[in-house]
Length: 77
Image (cartoon, rainbow, N blue to C red; front, side, top):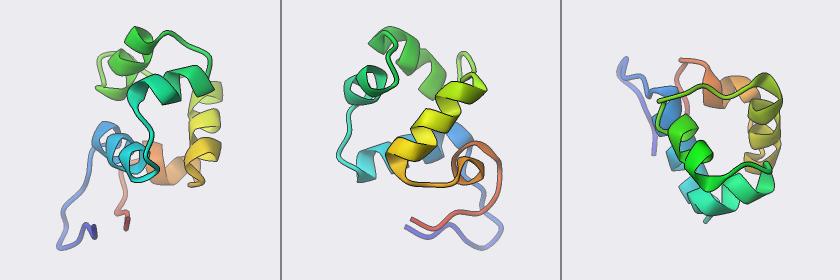
């Protein structure tokens, strides 16, 4: 998926798309970063925010720069 033409993807949607592209469920991600699934879901959906250390782990799991996931800039998937 390419986001172009000035469209911007929100960080929580970027995270969801990237996670799914790796074949990972929210449960999988929660386990990998050592947090309850309910907490991960709240963070992925934008209800609460990730701490920087959590964001760093997620970027490593998804093999993307932290900026690609959590900052509002164009991304190609």
